[in-house]
Length: 346
Image 1 (cartoon, helix red, strand yellow):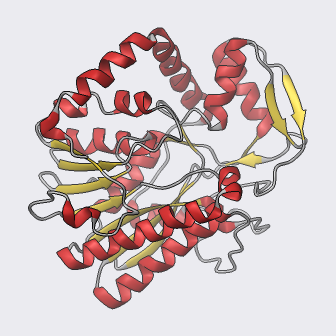
Image 2 (cartoon, rainbow, N blue to C red):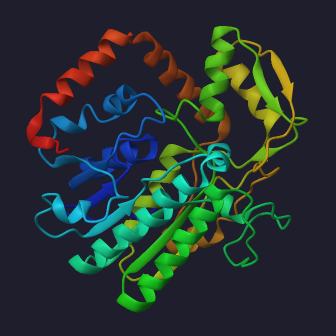
């Protein structure tokens, strides 16, 4: 696996979230200086994100800017001195089902926000841009495993359409302005710090609480579950590729697991049986995802290492640790973070 060079300067958006905070962990450990951007969207509890970056704030090579990439000029108005070697754009409105209720909001964040970042890169002469896309851009594609060479993409949700639109914007800026743009299509990322609304996290908490687990459809849908450290390996390798101009690359585990099998593995990891609550299929969902990762292997040296059973074991360990933390502890982290004015900006 290729590694990003040390002693660079990275601008990371969505840095306090699930994937973003793990990326910042890796970059700081490798000697990078990181300027982190997050708007702490209230989609879920701010205290969770504050806990994600608690240790980052103690590092002199980390700086947090609290701003919204949707706002024109927000980046120029912020104190972003110096040059950046790369922008890693992870900030987004996430989730298929919520996007159906608020398509305009998803467009504003995921498309207009991306264009604002690309404009900032153009004006500042930042030549490397790594973008977090999604497997959802493939839509209900019957040609599995899904390959980047398949150009017949038909998204079935506003979220998916917004990600595909952002990929195409990247192509425009690569073609017109010479920006190296790498779009990484993530496949169902899970692991410690996973958002509480996502299936594995939501199901685990329901099982532990004795609540029913909602199963949409007949349980035969499948996902290519990809552990967070494997995803970060791919992102870091993409950062290191200075020679690529425009590429779209799948990052997955290359193994589709059906929903009932995932729940069974989660039951084993927790040591508790689940109660299932059957519900109708949801609009915007696709029945199956499965990544062809041969391009990632060729260009990035990407090789996923964490199988679902091991990944769920690690997730359950983290969840047990998190549940041992009471609300007072999280509130202390939040209080301390807000007193560290040199690293924050509103």
